[in-house]
Every structure is written in structure tokens, then in C-alpha cells.
Amino acid sequence: MRKLITLFLLLTLMFTLWASPDGTWSIGFSSGYSNNAVLYQKGYRIDTGYENGNGFSISIPVNYKVNDFFSVETGITYVQKNFTWSKTLRTDSETLTFSQKQINGFVEIPLSLSFSITNSTVSAVASAGPYIGIWAHSYRTDSPYNSSVGLNGEGKYDTVSGFHSFNKADNRFEFGFIFTAGVEVEISRTVMFLRGVYDISITDLSSDYQISRVVRHNSTFRAEAGMRFLIGGAE
Image (tube, rainbow, N blue to C red; front, side, top):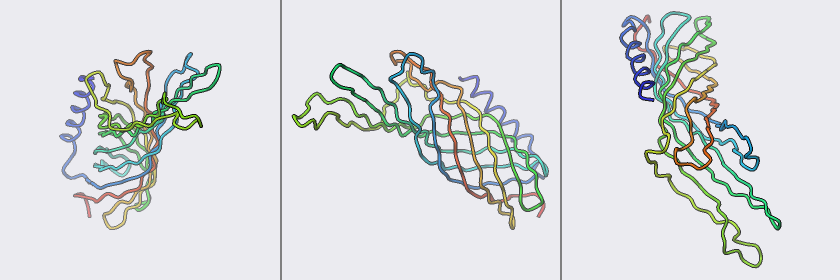
């Protein structure tokens, strides 16, 4: 993982040094909706499942326009990659379902090459590239079975919630690829944009200490709106 981080940082540094001061830079902000799915091999675990989770994202994009067709974009993004894990146990007398809802916050740095078709005001843009990220926090709500069940059936499930305390066995580093497509409108050196973003991690989300460990990956879709402000370049 250290080699991936080093390579990514070197690519970012090379881009910064290569970029011409005569080009057009822009920086801005965006926010939007996120929907995350956990990809995993179910195998014989027919009673275990993951449900998609909804969340939000906030980004500070930095863009360097090479020419009318190509640009390079980086920046920093906070994105929620939420999901709900559930497991069903069946006995002769009843069926019990245990669940855990996770609100997971990731901080990511992308490096994308963008291609655009424009008529000087409106542009159709598509981009792709790698990203690195860190699993910043995880708030979890568990619904374990409660042994003290009332005669009327109440209290079968308990609720326990709180922030997860990460340790060295947790795989917090994330590396993957990001793909975007959208529309940009430039008015008076301000670029307003609406885009869809898809990122897929290739690193394992599961922890080293988990029993019957299953390799898991985040697959996240985002719908974002925002704006960037042009710096430098031709007026």
C-alpha cells in the first residue's frame, strides 16, 4: 500500500511541476448525494447480506485546463460510503435477524484526466483516473439479540450504537478508480457543473481480525452539483 501511496503522490507532484503557469486553473466546491454498495463473494453465506446505504459528499475540486479538449483534475473529497450488514439465523422455533448499520466517512484525493466537447459556453465532460482515500470514521448501530425478552415478545432486539475505534488490524487505506460524466456551463469566469461520479475500490474493506473473513469492496455512485472559479489564463 505504501508503494501505491508513493506512486500516487509522485504523479500528483509531476502534474504540478508539468502544469504551465500560462494555463487556466480553477478551484471551487461541490456537494451531492452518495449511494454505496458493498461488493463481495457471497459463497456459502446465504444468510448474510449487505444493503446499499445513502449519504452525502463534499468536494473541493482543483482543475487545470490544458486546452479546449483536455484538463486534469484533483482536489479533496469527503464522501459517505454507508451500508447495512445483516445476518439471519434460523432455529426450529424462530428466525432471528441481526443487523449493523454503518455510517462511514472517507476522505479521498483523485487524479483524473478529463475530455470535453464544448461550444465555448456549455461543455460535455467525461473523466477517469485513480484515487487514494482513508477511512476517516465509522458510526455503527447494532441490533443484537437481547436475552431478556418479555412475555409479550418485546425486547427481543437491543440497540447499541457508537463510533468504531480503529486499530492496526483495520484496513483503512483505500485505492481505486473514479469515473465521471457531466455538463459544465462557463459564465463570466465561473464554471457551474452537474455530474455523476462512480468510484470503485480495489482494496479490501474487511479487517484482519475478522473470523471467516470475506473480501469486500466499496462501489459508490454520487450525483454532484457545484462551481469552480477560473484563475489565470486568457480573459
